[in-house]
Length: 203
Image (tube, rainbow, N blue to C red; front, side, top):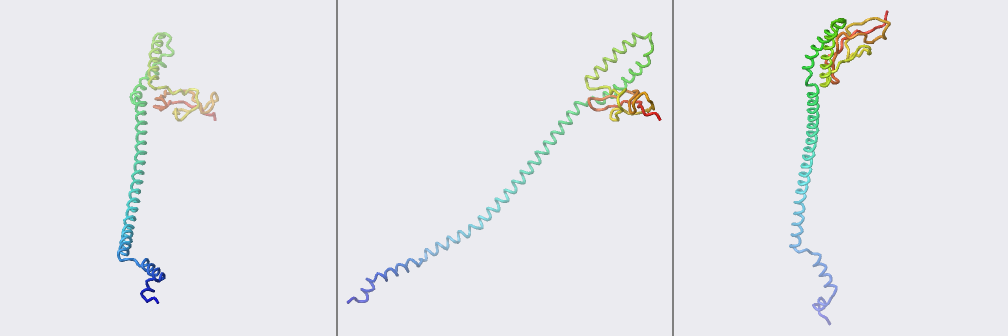
């Protein structure tokens, strides 16, 4: 006969149950380590959220600075283009005031030519005058000053100023029939329009 101690010792089911209970029970040390790990993970979550928030703020600041840079670059490019346009305009039209003064001299030449046009005894004077005025016009043409041709042309308010109107059937209406004072351009800019007499329909 087995005594109780021997039965308890030799019972395999008792040993298996004992091992299962031992495995199912955590030691205090295991419990503390798990709690500590949970606490560490819980502590890291706010840090991660703070890091994500800081990263988002830095990205927003970077985007803002990038937009400001792009606007500044565009403004500078526009400024540079305006400066270039103004410099080109200055180089092209810098002689405007000087040429306006010379125009009055040309007016004197024109009046002198008309006054001696019918004087046959002054052929040499007229010849010398024509040579001189041609040289003057050629020189001014090289620096951009050009006469505005008007006689026989259709009236153009951008180039001509009508100071007279003459009803006539000899010319189409709105045609310039006479130049009263010569106009001039500096390249494509009108310095002074040509004063003209314009044909109108006869009543």
